[in-house]
Structures are given as structure tokens and as C-alpha cells.
Image (tube, rainbow, N blue to C red; front, side, top):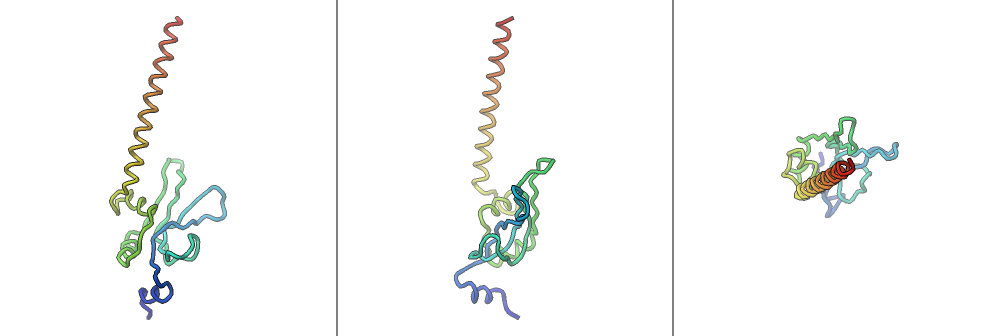
Length: 138
């Protein structure tokens, strides 16, 4: 029986295993669907991978939900073996509660929150100006 670490060292000297997104939907245009996989870092995004660990559908469904599924037991195993999650996968795992939240996730949420408040304030002032003009005309 060949041990996994000796297999990695023989075939991929200096390489390592990463947990990353791999594009899955090739048949449909404008409909991305990703697998969360354990793969060698030197392989292309859509090439052969070691194991599928989950899936990610980035387009919202009819309930405005983006669907993500993980096999946390296998993710724990691969991280224990020394696999490195990529930034997008680390963000997803942070949102799922497996890792701490990624700092960029927090800053993006703050930016969007302030943008929403600013647009709400500008809409509110425009509405009050429109009402004032209507009352002045009457």
C-alpha cells in the first residue's frame, strides 16, 4: 500500500494540496456551478482532482439564496494533512462558521452597509423635495 505523502512527494516535488473551487458546469452558458475539491496546486482549475469536498452555486435561486454544501469531516481531514484552502474557499468556510470570518468579508459588508444607508438618505431627501414642490404648487 502506497502512503499518500510518499505519493505526493514522488509525483509533485515541491507541490502541495489545496482546497479550491473547480468549475463544474461546462454545458450551460452563463450558469456557473462550482465543486469544492482537494487538488494539487500545480494542476489547472478544471483538471483532475483528488476528492470532491462540496459544491457552490453562486447564482441566487427563487428564494434569493446562494447554495453551498460542505463535507466538513473530509475538509478537516485534508486540512490536517496540510492542505491550504484558497481565499474564496476560506471566505465560504468563514461564512459557514468553520473558520473565523475572513477580514475582507467584514470590510465588504461594512462598505455595502454604508452605501445602502447613503442611497436611502439620498432617496429620502429627494422624496421630501418632491413633496415640498407639490405642496408649493397647490
